[in-house]
Each structure stands twice: as C-alpha cells, then as structure tokens.
Picture: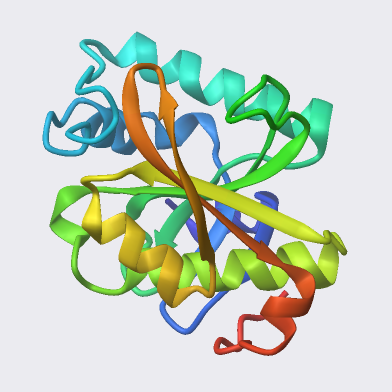
Length: 193
C-alpha cells in the first residue's frame, strides 16, 4: 500500500513496530488469508471462511460498527513492511454475552506466521491505553476459549483479571475484565495516540 493511501486512512495508534488503523477494502486479501486458515479458527468454533466475498462482508460489518459506534476492530500493519498482520481493538458488544450487554470487548486475531512474536500483547496494551485515555472508558472486557492458553496469557500480560468461566455457544470460555483504575497502575506501553 502506498504512503499516499496510508495518509488518507484513519490511524488510531502506533507502537514501536505497528500501525493500528481502520480496516479498509484493500485489506480483503489479508483478512481472507487470516480467516480461511483453520488453525486460526481452532478456538473460534473452527468455521473458516470459504471465499473472499465472506471477507468483504466482514469488512463492511466492521466499517458499519465504525459508523454506528465510533469504534470497531482495527487492522494491524507492520510499520516496516506495510504488511497486514491481522486485527485488534475494541468492539461495542450490543448483544447479551455472559449476562452483559453494551460493553467494550478487546479482541485480536493474527495471521499464523505472526504468532508468538508479542504482537497480540503489544496491540492489547496499546488498545487499553486508547480505551482509558482517549475514550475515557471505565472498564473493558475480554473472553477466550478456556483451552486457548495463548490468548489467556495475552490478556493476563495486558493486566486483565480472570472473573469466571461461562458457556458461550456451547463452549466453555474464560471471562476477563480490567478497570481504568487497575490499568492506571499497570501501564507498560508507550503507544502514540
């Protein structure tokens, strides 16, 4: 992607290695690569997308969240190569999950070749800084399949506390939360807003 196109895209955060920006239509190939990989979907119900049109619909849905809620998942872009790495960020959850509704959920999903490089933790920390300083949220939630140890570790490194386990679509999940007060004491990343 050219620098001219990047200048027109809303960039929300930058870390030392990464740019976190709105997901745009030209991310479709990267999103398809991400969501068509069965390994990526191991703890997500293992239902990979089957065609690129499904990825286009995901992009439209995320862009609709930007318009309706002012927030949605962001593309993770490698600063050096400009490559699409995956997505991260907040989502305003408007359906009932674990007896909660109208809450902000932190999530992330990376291309398999980027696993184990600290990217999910880096983006989680940057997103929390944005949540608590720019949006002035009081709390953020997250969840993951109880067998997804990697995701559990990311959330704990970012300062989330385990609250409970619950059934989500027939699968046991862990429920996490971090408050602004808890985060203020654990700031560990200098992300540029």
